[in-house]
Image 1 (tube, rainbow, N blue to C red):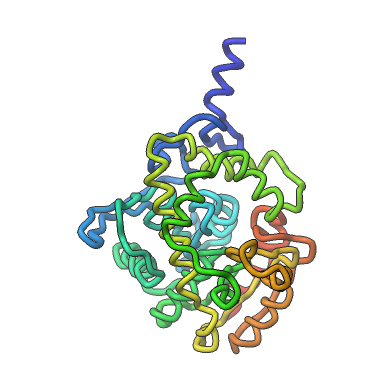
Image 2 (image 1 turned 135 degrees about the vertical axis):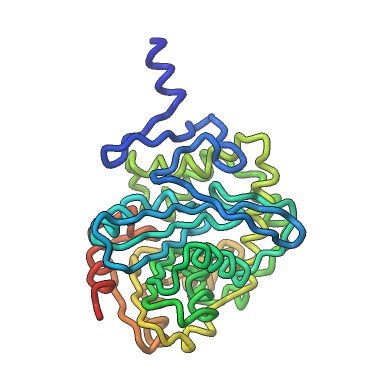
Length: 335
């Protein structure tokens, strides 16, 4: 019984043959996920932003048989770079070097006291990692919020991006047209009310079509365990600031300016839209219509391809991995 309790407290999950320590349901994760072991070695760069000294974490997975090409993976709002484990492993096996940042305010990176978040700032920070590593050409993959960031990065640094991949990106529409504005304080109060159970119910309903698998628990724990942390108010404040960034800084009006070869991977069951529940009821069902938004976005990005994955939600690379990785590898191998 003692041994069983010990292992439950550690909450160890076996992922692809490698043990990765995870916070348990009621075990704090630490302000910067100190109790969480990432799948690959974590490195840091030092940044000075708006008067604060911050550290930005990233993983750098190098292939045994390199092709001389690099793929950068950008995480979503409710996740961190660790959820790219399987994707990064397969990319490295195919000869790609893989860079996986935790953006400032997320994962193992610093949680500032107060900064103004912009996608331009996050893009600059990401480029600083690449400059530090002397990488000057990449394929860039962004999921969810990471898709908005990948779009902004590509618009700012088109010469660095050989190929752009957007996996169920948010921001394909301008929610401000239909959703009442919420202040940062509004977002903050909502975040303070989050619990493990609320986070799981949200993911179960909106990500996984009410079909929960044990593998999903590891990614939920990394975020939801923060709600038990003594520093959660600071984490919640950063989350509120990034929600405001997402809502007030749309990229959908600039897709036509992207000239880089682009792949859109869109799970067709996804209906994600920020603040949808606050929109007029007659509008709510029209927001986050990814089957329509995917086609619209592909028409706006002239040099683009669209892969539609039926009966898959917001996280194709977690929920339906083979349907995600196969078109990704095919696209990356194109000249």
